[in-house]
Length: 116
Image 1 (cartoon, rainbow, N blue to C red):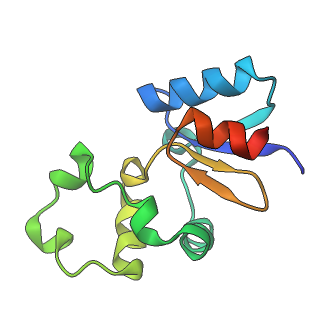
Image 2 (cartoon, rainbow, N blue to C red; image 1 turned 90 degrees about the horizontal axis):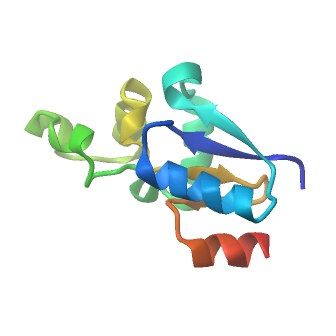
């Protein structure tokens, strides 16, 4: 496996927990900050192909909940990707790209199983 990349934003408690877990377990990762580096459409489309757009789109977050109803209606993959491109804070965090698979969100047991 090449170096894993963890995607998210610095000021997120879940990101901090995930990065602490990775540090504590000696897992080297590159951190990709959406606020600094952004995200591109091919990456989001690739992730959606692996885990599904419904897993990626954080509909429970404040950013999504503040959207006009028209933006939240009739969601499909293309619309969800447009929303996440426009406002990357709508992407569920963190996204840990291990090359052959993605882990979306943080659960210590999932990280332990994947990174054993």
